[in-house]
Structure formats: structure tokens, C-alpha cells
Length: 202
Length: 242
Image (cartoon, rainbow over all chains, first blue to last red; front, side, top):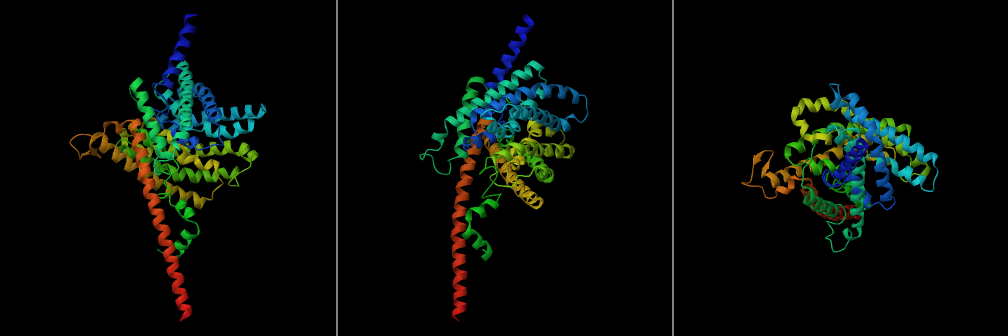
């Protein structure tokens, strides 16, 4: 029983760590290009995007954990890392694609269109690389994967929530759009540092 | 300004600007691509240089390979039908990121030979380049020809590298008071510029300045083009009159 509680504790603490202290967007800038594009994209629902990203990260974590163990003894592992982890993402993507095609709901079409954009993303690959670089265990990887996805969702919500203000006419025209969004994310990142301090482990 | 260029600008100024991936339509400043390495890693001129070489070696070859392979799943329209997107978007995305990962296999030993252990400073951001929108954004767009893949790849590389080096040097100067390790200031003016939060803010301000200058340049080109076309028309009219 205590083993189970301990595993749940580790999972939850790594999830919380990934949401706040090691936020994908605010401390590592992972997936930030996609995030700023999402702010101006009215066709893509931010919630569904972040949900698909979260599910992909959770499913990729165990695959990448075992794949990472397989390539660990190889001399050229640094060279192989992106190919192996992109292959893991591909397996998960194909699985999600097949599930979405099999479950024909009212939003299946929209989700099938969003899936590649949400899954083939620097947030997903970046999180996997952080997990493997820091040699997380399986439980830690799963918790970190989920937390990173939730952190991304939080960032998407914070930025999309502010988009009406970021389009204000009071903002000088040169700053409107991408520049002011970047400054806004920077200020939010500073606020997060205020709570957690700052350190990026590359 | 040549007459053909002037006529092109008068006819469609946006199309002309769209082709200029270095200044008027820089992939970072105008489309927000490749931001993660810029914000987190481009803290010094040296880091920026290593990233610039990596992008230069990866971008065009991977785009060429992806262009070749993605012919199996071509998107034929600028605005493809929903059904076509559902079928082709995922395989295209995997082809583009997979191609970049394959090219990375050849690029990594070159980078290792060039930079040695300094390459470790790039951490996860080096392998992460294989899914950067800068390299793979074409998967959601219409199928391009090989000639366009090469030409656009080179122009985008140039635009990105330019901004990368500029940002790296500016941040190093602000955060450490040096540029490529050479001291320029007795003490740093803004140590925060070396952190990701500072990177977002400095990049945002740099983008705003760049955009203002690009708009200024566009207006200048439009006026120049209109004047050039008018002068040529006047000359032709004079010749006919004589």
C-alpha cells in the first residue's frame, strides 16, 4: 500500500513541478512558436489543442522511457536521440489517429486536423528530451509528461485570455501582434520566477 | 530600381515583400517561427553562432528530403478540403520531422567536430530543432517544387541566422557587458536579458523595432516603385511624341 502511495506521490509531485517550477512555456520556451500562432488562429480550439498535446505527452512518456533505455548503451546515442523519439511520437500519433477515426464523434474531423499540429510539436519532443536527459524513472516521466501538458494548457489559456487586450488600439502599431505577445509571455515568466526562482536544466 | 521590379511592387507590394525572407518577411519577426532556441539559448554570441551553424546545416537539406518524400501525400490546394487534411496532414507532418531527424544523423558529427564539448551548451534545444516550425511548417501547406524548397530554405536560413546572431549579441551585451567574450561595458546593463523571461522581452522589443523598420522600408519601396514606373511611362510617351 505504501509503495502505491509513494508512486502516486512521485507522479503528483513531478506533475506539479512540470506545471509551475519547470513550466514548458515560461521557463523553457517549449512550443512557444505554436502558442503565438494559436493566439491568432480562430479555427483551432485552444482547449482541444492542449488536450491532444497532454494526451500525446502522457502516451509518449513510457515509450520514450523504454526507447531511451535501448539506446543508452550505444556510443552514438546523442546522434540517434531525435530519430528515436520522433519515432515514438509517430507511433503515438498513429494510434491516436486510428482511435479518432474509429470513434466517429461530432468533433472527430476537427481533432484529426489538430492532432498533427499538437503532437508534432517542440513541447512534446522537448518534454521527452528533458525526461531522458535527467534520467527520470517511469513514474516520474509520466507525471512530468502530464504536468508539462497541463502547464502548456495553462500558458495557452493565459495568453488566449489576454488576446483581446493584446489587440488593443492603445498599443503602438509596431508592437501589436507577435511583439506584445512575446513581452506579455516574458512578464508572465517573470511572475513565475517570483514564486519558484529560476533555473533551466538543459 | 529596375523597371520590372518596380512594376512588380506596384502590382502587388505584399507579394514582393513575401519573397524577402531576410528583412521584410523574416520568419521570426513576421511569423514567430523558431522562437524556443532564440529565447532560451541565444544568450551569447557564441551560442547564437553554434545554433546558426546547426540551422544552416539542417534546414535546407531536410526541406529538400521532405519535399521529395512528401510527394506521396501532396496537398494540392492552398485551402485544402477537410477530408484531404484529415488524410494527409499527419503523414506529411511525420515525413517532415522524420526527414529533419534523418538529416540530423549526418549533421551531428559535423557539429561535434566543429564545436566539440561546447555543443553541450545547446542541450535539448539542438535535437529539438527537428520539430521546430521553422523546419517543418511546410507540412500543412501546398506541395512545393524542389527548386522552391532549395531557394526558400536558403532564404529562410539567412533570415533566421541574421536575427539569431543579432539577438545573441544584444543579449550578451545587456546581460554580461560583452560581445563574443570581448568586454564592451564595465558592468552589465540588464542581467535579466540572459534569462528566458528577458529573452521573451528583448525579442519582443527587437521584433517591434524590426517591424517598424520593415514597414518604413515597404512604404519607401512603394513610393520609389510608383515614381520609377511613372518616369518610364513619361519617357515612353516622350519617345512616341518625338
